[in-house]
Length: 248
Image (cartoon, rainbow, N blue to C red):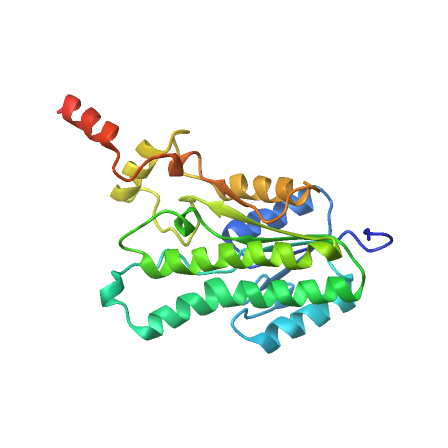
């Protein structure tokens, strides 16, 4: 299978803001046609990833307007939901899982079906997080939603590889998007100090990694962390405590 005469089209789900908007802009800067799915103003196609019918409708509209996409990037999701596991309610759990885990799976499934039906090889990337494998005691539900998504990515990569479909994930660290809130918040000072490359991530950092990953023909089933080295640290951080003591 190959792209053949298929249009070289990209789809960005959640592409009206934040990391998704940066991915869409990166494609436009490379003169690649891009179709943005989102629930907010600025979308080319309105799609609520929580609703299977909405995802299927967006898929049909995309095919009608632009053909089957070769590259799909799923950035739709909600941010670091805070709260201890014992204090969370079922409604919060369901909402986070519905948007961060089930929604990307619905999009991936729709895209894979369309690609297989059209005999089109291509690449899918879903946005996981370093929180999929780092323990954060204040974000247990969010961590669980991204860990589940990372496994869905790996299983999908294995299932769909015979059809020439590559499936990977991107794992952003702390990234300066509207979802993060004020970048001068006191807790972010510690994040910068613990990040080896010395700053917060920018949406453009993630976008460049996404496009590069889409272009790697021999890579599938991987979750690529894009965090400036933040996840290299042990949460114990004994060296950091020594530094603090020496400065005190």
